[in-house]
Image (cartoon, rainbow, N blue to C red):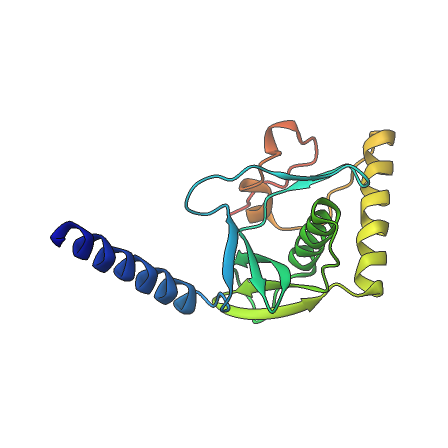
Length: 168
């Protein structure tokens, strides 16, 4: 009997701590169906778009599945590249689940932003994917910034032929 009470109290404590962690990091209420933060999760794959990815969370909220991506950075609003990353997760989730995904949530510096996966964002995502694939096929990929810090921390730095050196 005392073992059951200990397990029950432990379960309540875990639930309470998860709730507080979600709340403090800006993650909205909802049942977490998938998480890639605590333990690495399997990637999701869209065969239709040949696109793969792992959102930080997938929530079930009001009978909808919603991808959630957590980001931090400088500035007061999410960057467009982060919005497009979330859009890709919306598309992948829609394709893998077979269920319409109307929106995703981008938590930027602990502030949740609801990003509507509307026709305009869908078109922009497809356009960017086509441009990226054309660049890969042609072998000509141009750097899209002039920031030494981004180059220094880039995961593709070892392959890049257009590195900006920090002059300081």
